[in-house]
Image 1 (cartoon, helix red, strand yellow):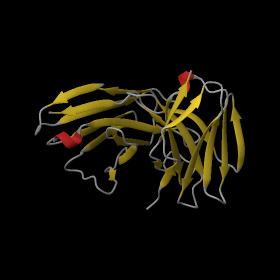
Image 2 (tube, each protein chain N blue to C red):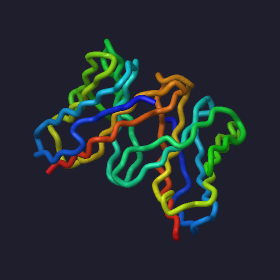
Image 3 (cartoon, each protein chain N blue to C red):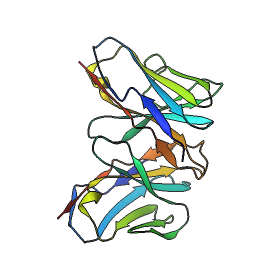
Image 4 (tube, helix red, strand yellow):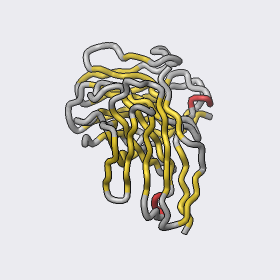
Length: 113
Length: 113
C-alpha cells in the first residue's frame, strides 16, 4: 500500500481565513481523493483530483470553496476557503490500491473559531 | 443516489464473543466491498476487502458478501477490547483505483472486558 503523508495534522483557524492541506504520496498515482469527516459522521467525498485536469467535485462541494491542485502524480493540495465554524472537520486524502482499495493519510483535524 | 447503510449502533459485546456487523448497499452494479476500522481521532484502516459472493476469512475476521441481497457483513470472532472502534462499510462501483468509494455511516463497536 502507498504511504500517504498529510500536513498539517491539525490546525485552529480564524473564521474568514483559508487553510491549504498538503498530501504527499510515496508513489505515482493517477487519482487522488479528498474526503471530509464531520464530527461523529462518516466520510463524504469532496472531490477527485486527476493529474493534468480539473478536479471533479461531488454534489454540494464547489471549487470556489474547496480549490484543489494536482501539480504532479505524487502531490495534491486542498484549500478550505473563507472558513466558517461549519468547516470544522477532519479532512482526509486518499489514494487507490491495486485492488481498488482506498488508503488514507493520517488526516487534518481543522477547528474554525 | 448510491447509498450504503449499516446497522445502527452502538454495538456492545463481551470479550471473547462474536461481533456481527451488517451493511446493505443500493447500487446493484457495485463490484468492490470493504470494511474499515477507525479508532477515535485516527484515519480509517482497511481490514477486509471482498469482491465475490461468499465468505472471506482473515484471522479473526470474516467478510460475507451476497450480491443478490446487496448485503455485506463482517464477523469478528473472539472479540478483544482492542477491537473497540467504529467500523465503516465501503462500496465501490468498479474494481479500479479510479472509482469512487461510498462509505456507510459506521457502526460503533464496544468490546466489554
